[in-house]
Image 1 (cartoon, rainbow, N blue to C red):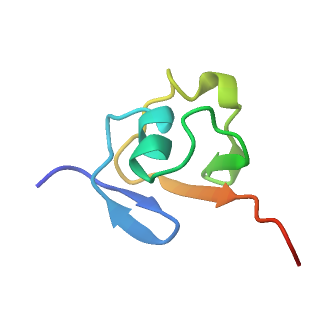
Image 2: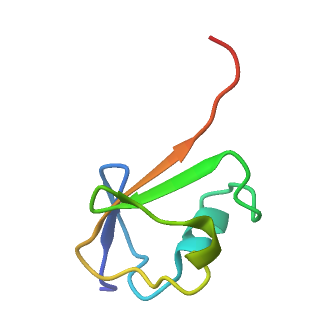
Length: 69
């Protein structure tokens, strides 16, 4: 079984992949527009997404800006 990270409260087989790959796998824009990612409660700068590998057991939050209100 692949090692998992927890993304928005759900386990996901993404350990070893980059933050950028995770964002695309989630169907979000590859350029990250309107998307924010935090790992362990710390925001990950968009410019580091391609090189930031996810580690098994990490808690990841992916937030998407929504229009309206």
